[in-house]
Length: 330
Image 1 (cartoon, helix red, strand yellow):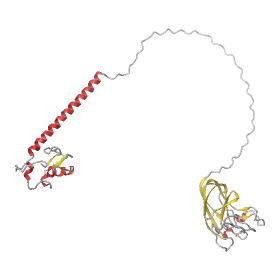
Image 2 (cartoon, rainbow, N blue to C red; image 1 turned 30 degrees about the vertical axis):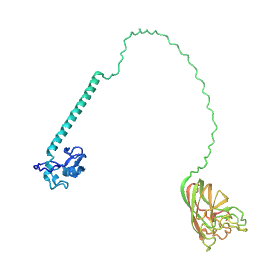
Image 3 (cartoon, rainbow, N blue to C red; image 1 turned 90 degrees about the vertical axis):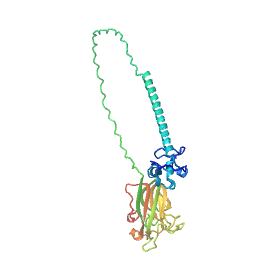
Image 4 (cartoon, rainbow, N blue to C red; image 1 turned 180 degrees about the vertical axis):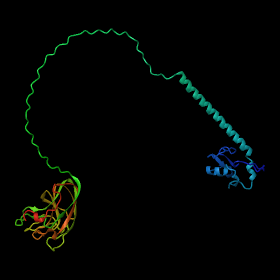
């Protein structure tokens, strides 16, 4: 900047505002190429340009030199010449663009007038002479001979088809059922013959090969006032008694046990287990001496409640604990 003192000139924008490549030219509006030459050409934000550089209050800007207020008038003639050059350049570019658009419009219009689009061609057939129509001659119609109708055979009576009753359909369903197991469940049908068939609790649940979970809780005693037994039993490996064998000799004594269809293959239920099998589910109290297991009043020896959850079916009778008094062999 020159240090010559010039008269004060009223400007509409800061004299230190200029373009990046042309210090003497400003766009007249906020532009990203504006630079502040009071800060040696530093960039200026668009917001600061609108608030300070392009307003009449630019002298209060913190970057405006306070000790040389007349320095703003130094670039006034150059600023005006730079603006005139900018407007002349913009006007010339506008004329060139207008001329180019006019040429494009003229070429398109001329092309359409010279080669109009071909429409569908309509072919008009030439008239031809039609041959004279022949006059039909009358012909006597033949007389139809009546045809005798065939005799209708008498309907044959077919034997009635016997109706077969459909077998019951077992529909597996996601179910949740509770049953009650007493200390008498698992007793032999004949006490005089310990090897006789055992009377287990028929749960009414028909397993269908899908996983089923059994969860048990409660207290059972093998006799009135006896020791309380949980579904886990004594946690022993065997329940062997040569005189009175348990319902499941190779499982824990006084435990909750189960079987599917065949009592020859029992399994330990305990507090809970998950099984996958097919067939009817039975439960029992694994003991060898059932005579004092509250046979007349099963609830006097407590009970286990077993929750059965999973995909299975129920028989027509549903799931109901069989009272001991109604068991066969009583």
